[in-house]
Length: 113
Length: 112
Image (tube, rainbow over all chains, first blue to last red):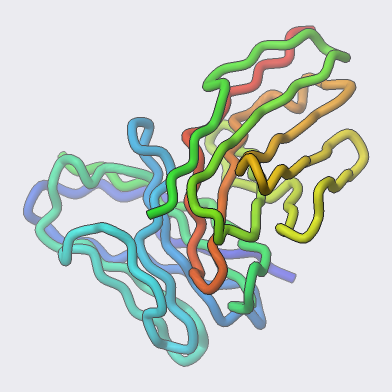
């Protein structure tokens, strides 16, 4: 079974631009979560989608948004990029039930110049 | 909200010795506690997890213990090997909340 796939692997953007990251979950998984990883703040939860609905949201500004499609694939968008948005963005999938194991993709490394 | 403290931030042990990493959490409603291993440039990989109705779980050289009263849980790695070198993260999930709150990570180095 294929794992969680994230594209692109690397991105370089400039301040003020917007970016869209993509995530394909493990086949059969209906929940997709997004996390931001930085050396200073560690792994922080952005949001979680299940059956095309956002179920949970972390403490990030409205510039960070996401969506999920009917095939469970998910995208996250960051608008008006800031230098501090430079990070590894990790997507994770699970079946969506209580306390189910979360499996991570390899992430998208975003650099904002 | 939930707060997770992980110690130590770095740990260096001799090959063959044991390593222990400890995490404490604040929300008594938390009921799921996974551990992830992240090698340099790679994805976090789930290595073991425990639920609140269990006190200890083992998988070969890895074990996790949970003390719900004290709100802490620990990762134990025995007979360490060079390939155990990585950053280890503990995480906590509260019942009904489909999100993980992570500790700050422990960089484990195994010295040959």
